Image 1: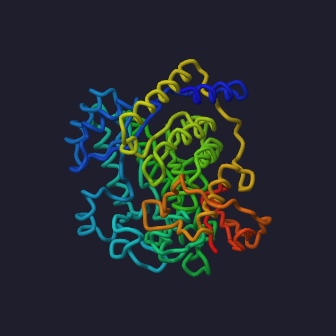
Image 2: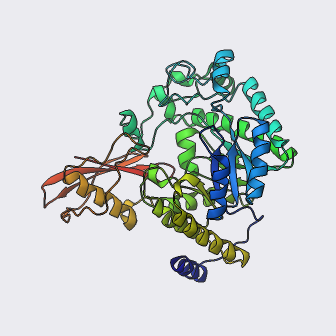
Image 3: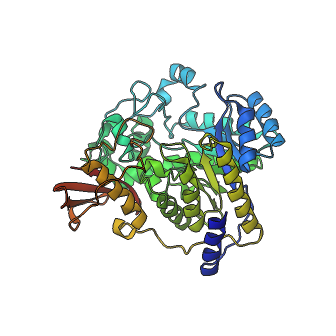
Amino acid sequence: MKRLLVLAAVLFAALSCRPMAEEYPMFWTWLEDIPSVDVEAAFAHMEEAGLDAVMLHAASVEDYVKDVELAREHGIKVYAWVWTLNPPRQERPQMLQEHPDWFSVNRNGESVAETKAYVNSYKFLCPALPEVREYLAKKVEEICAIDGVEGICLDYCRLIDCVLPISLAYNYNLKQDTEVWPEYDYGYHPAMIELFMKQYGYDPRELEDPSRDAKWCAFRSAQITEVANLMCDVAHKAGKKVTASPFAAAGLANFMVFQDWPKWDLDIVHPMAYTDFYTMDPSFARDATLSNINAAGPEVTVMCGVDTELGGDPEFIFDKMDAAFGAGAKGISLYTIEGLNSESLRARFKVYADSLRTLRAEGKLPVAPGTAPSVNPFENKSLMAVVERNMQRVIAGEAIHEKSVNGMIPDDPSRVYPALDLTDYTLVKETDRLKVYEVTDRASGKTMQVYFVLYGNLISGWDIRI
């Protein structure tokens, strides 16, 4: 509580304030109603932690009706979490059987209906098909007719990841190192190719590297935007608000999954700035939020999605929220309530949430200047502390990667390592997506290469290799 008020006082004294266009719930989470989840207990935990809203996915209208009533009893507003271009698990088998031609195709000509892209659950639809658009519009119309649903949250409104975060790639024995491989480069359905050729007069598959063709990339993003705006229009006509949970930051999202969400007709956006997938440093939530505020239109309320259960210490949630609010986020969405896995942690979270709501009511939410995050890693002391701590682990002979939720082996903060005695960092490779530095630890005599990933003018990952 004390550190929160100090942060708010310092930032408010130094920075300007901007009133919200509309006062939306401030603390959100996601929840999927499936047999293994105790929905009523989850709502009770949300209330205990002081959350205002949930992005809820249910399998049927009947389940939504039941869950909305439960949520109301705990003071939680419900926005329907709509799985769009990646169909919900309940619908996927029948759709694969009845409409295999609806599914996305990669640069090698392989349909995801018949092959695996990273995981079996990635069965994305082609956004250019009229049948797919009609299916999505009807789904949104049906959900928006449910009494008590405040709005919808668009999720999976994208293509399959053309690259993964650098640490997560270790889960799949990949070292993509920012380059787009044909088997993970999607959007090549015949319907997409036909539309593109009519507009531009050439076949992107004939290029040496289609992933770097500006027109082809913009076209694929535009197809996603058209689908998103179709669903926004349906929801708005029903009097519902629309939010979305795109990838962490605007430029990163556009490159990795073709989400040009600043062009979507959104009311609220919850970019998924999951630090444990990217830099492992809470400052990533700040940098992503700065990037998103700069990209969003003035009519869009920018929240920040933060992770509580993706490999890092749940206690870091407070550092992540400080970073996001300090950069100007208007609210927080947690992935997920399960990460607040103790009564004491939920109690601390409620104190934090109530304090921020008080500041908002007083018009004192601090808003940082709209500066862009730095892509110079050496200007980010907290990031470099994380990187150099992992250098110590590597020098000690420890592995830092494993097959896990985020591709990283958790650090044991009680471990003490010899101090580093580093030479200057020397830049040995630089592209538009990557910087690689070489550095030697004089004490151990070990030379390392340190990779920094740059997507959308944002440091979005690192790696250490000997």
